[in-house]
Amino acid sequence: MAEQRTSLNNPARTVSLPRPLDYQTDRARVGIIVDVAVGVGLLLCVVAIIIGLRMALHATVVPCPDGHYFPPGTTDFRCYAHKHAGDGTSIAIFAVVFGIVLGLAAFIAHTQLRRPDPR
Image (cartoon, rainbow, N blue to C red; front, side):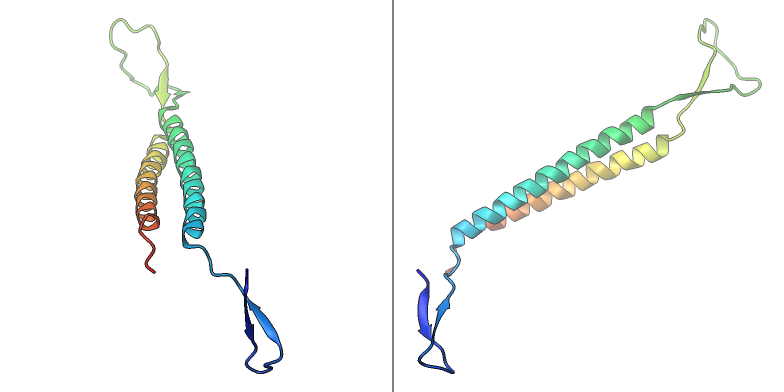
C-alpha cells in the first residue's frame, strides 16, 4: 500500500508516495533483460561467423593465367579464386572477438546482479 503524507505547501492535501522498489524483483527483471540481450548478441555472432566463413571459403572459377602449371595426373583443369577471403576472415574474427567481449560483459553483469542487498 502506498504511503500517505501531507503536502508541505497545503497541509490539508495528502499526496500518495510511490511504493519503494523491491530490490530482488528489480534485479531479477534486469537479469532477464541481460540474458535476452546476451542471447541475441551471441546468436548474431554465430550468424556473422557462418557468413564470414562462407565468404572466406567460397571459390569461383576464373580463367587460368597463361603458363599456369598443372601437376601430372590432374583431371580438373579449372582455376579457382577466393575473391572475398580477406573480408570473410575479417568478419569471422571480428565476430569471435565480439562474442568473447559480450560473454565477459555478461559474466560481469551477472556477478554484479548476484551481490547481496547493500541496505
